[in-house]
Length: 235
Ligand code: SAM
Image (cartoon, rainbow, N blue to C red):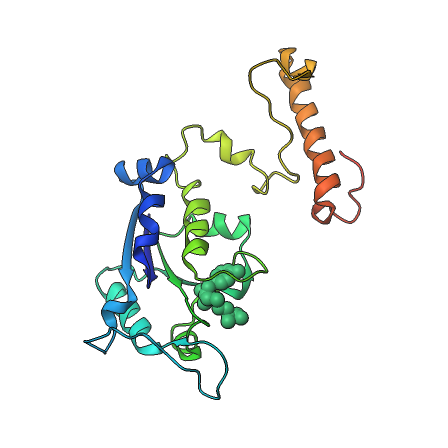
């Protein structure tokens, strides 16, 4: 799977892409992440300017349409698969696991990262990207949001996770109605707190039931909004 990130700050990604799962997935050729600096498509050869003051006044600067559209058209033009264009913006639809699962089936995602006060509306009118938000708060730029998308999607690319099961049991995975329940590892006792006996019982059916119940109780405690209207007790 290929990701093209369109950004004014490609350097932000270097640490993230050189560590852990992402690094391994790239090394093994399971994913390819290409970074493109929008500034390279500026029509200003001297200062590489890509932003300007907003028409009608107001604070801050707006990213100009020209460099962004030229960058995307050029990046798309190089490959047979034009890919799905996503604009990371607080004004987009919320990013959810079902959306992540859908995108994991794409062959190519292009992630447009905004800066300043955002992008000229004509970028959105011309290219009609899918607009997606990572939460109801304002980040300085779309780079961290793009990393969130890559990080979430990559987990679902076949072969990336060592244990395929681990994404299936994750909270929010389709087929998992509730949050994942409590997890324990060694030591068996820590500062007076014991690992629940059931987990040592070897009774896999009972353990599965216990885990399901724990997931339900956790969901009811911290995310009651996730429970269906008639779902006030575990079943
Ligand atoms: N003035 C804009 C508004 O009120 O909607 C916010 C601009 S924000 C400072 C700059 C850029 O950060 C945005 O263009 C977007 O790419 C990114 N960004 C900020 N918050 C985000 C969020 N919650 N989800 C996704 N991207 C976000």
